[in-house]
Image 1: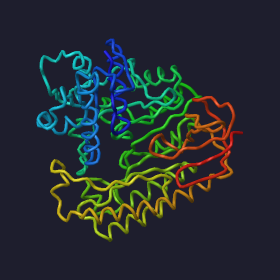
Image 2 (image 1 turned 135 degrees about the vertical axis):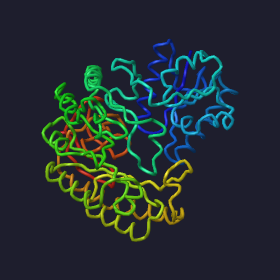
Image 3 (image 1 turned 90 degrees about the vertical axis):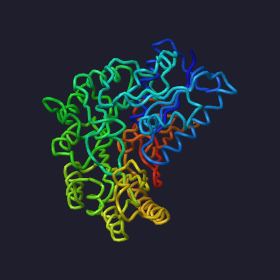
Length: 438
């Protein structure tokens, strides 16, 4: 049994894909990197926004051709796309043999082996799914960096977000299980652990008794001083002083705060279902920089949300100019009739939203360039991840998260992939740095 798996979407989806591959390998399967050679092709999909839906469908249709010209006998689609569109997707994509929703990842081996008794669409309630055990086999995409999912789902009610419908309410894993998995990953050679969830900083609020994230971080930090720990997908409402203090006090936890704020106009934030104000955000980021002077700040923003006026957008531009984020991602509002925000009035024309996207990205490019130039002359610990060319390597500092941020190019001889090396920064662009190993 040879299988090929295409993983789309975010890092949380990647963890699901790695666990599915682990289940298939444990069941006797063999991974192939060439879909033409695969007996089974699996597409783990994303459907968060319109562009993600389009990418998922395009990938499915592209890989479906191997049922005609390759060895593929079974095409399986998993994850958020079938979960969002339910049974209606079966008729829309007749090329697909089996659909598994987000609560059915544990059935992947049965689906590949044809053991689902003729079921074409399996959509169990995501709220009923159980997190995999810490020692579940994972086929990781990186030997030295690993995402560690600490909870599943989300209990918030942001009007633009479909995730609670796709993943259910927040279900935090038990801290001991997470710590055991962290220990296993570190023992296997992982040098950077990245804690993720839909609402990472809200971790543990649903446990009985509650377990705050900073307690979990403290336990993981004690496992090894020779690794780097990073937290992604924080929330402005659930970041407290204890969390900030824990990051400030532990050298092996990155001083990196990923906090998607979505907007900075109070009116738009209220319509989005975000229970904070622009004034709250100013206080939060001032507090972060006071408590952690070397803090790296990253955020994500939506432009073109229903009702966003020119005045709202100008407030957003002013906020971004004031805070001067190290890294910032921008999304154009993606509408759909199954979102609460769909019923809001005064939808913004796509051309206007696109213009606002361009203006915000242009502003951030200038800010990022100025911020990056401040690193010139400084020396940082860089995790070496790739050999690009003779005596040229690529890696990341503590203020560069994988995939979403820039990289640091390293001029050096004979570096080991997966090792930390000190690099003195010599050059800077809008997103990337370059330096010499010292």
